Image 1 (cartoon, rainbow, N blue to C red):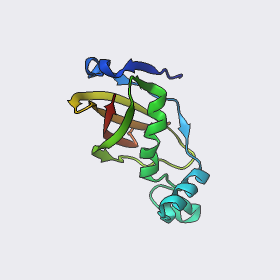
Image 2: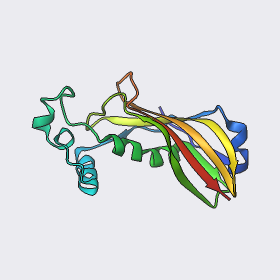
Image 3: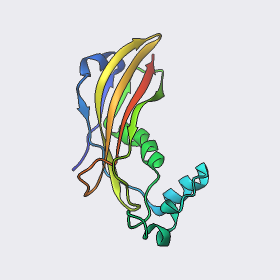
Image 4: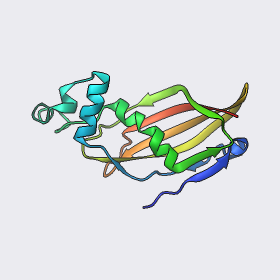
Length: 153
């Protein structure tokens, strides 16, 4: 299934509350990427890095760091939503974050994003996105994140 990018002017965001964008394309996460994330963050839990150890866990193999999955929201969302007329956009935070199912290394993930709320803030707009990450072949989401983005003109 191919994805499509929705392009919308910042001023049009309030009229799109309730709209779901995506899903994005599938993105496979490799063991090399997991290793580089571990090296960058210092999170060297063997469940992420040691296939022999990980095979003895309930997951049956190495799993992707939850925060690596979350970090991929930026490139995945860029595939499905482009907001124009923005001087700068910043991640303002998360209201809710859960990792209901593990992502096995070598799996592909994608994201869908529902625009839940848009409010005015000084100099721009604040948008609340309900992001759902899924992994290929899994019924349960692998991450659910309510993300707040601020767009400034």
